[in-house]
Length: 110
Image 1 (cartoon, helix red, strand yellow):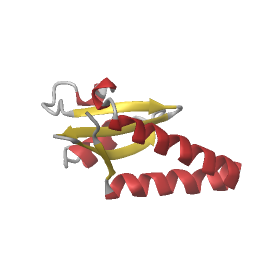
Image 2 (tube, one colour):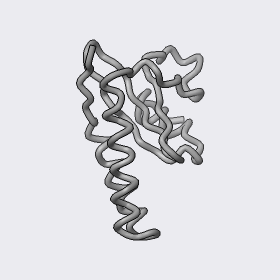
Image 3 (spheres, rainbow, N blue to C red):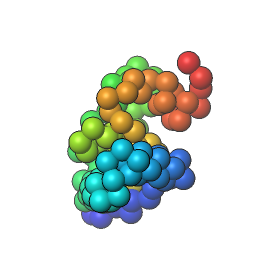
């Protein structure tokens, strides 16, 4: 079964911010390669979206539908809904993502 992968509006903004950050710090070529790698990783979810792990920050919250795929230092957080995969967040995995995930996925401020 093949799934349709969609990048949510906020995740698109995340990708734009990541691209801009890398352009400013490492140049346009490296930014392009990083963005391509992130998009390939997201698109790979079309064939096996259940392979991603559950973000540890969401343990015990009741939001078990969210999974993550790690691509380098980046975490791609998504959920599967029927035959669709919705990417909701792309963030630097070296950060403390508890607050980001709470605001973005749980719509709550901690």
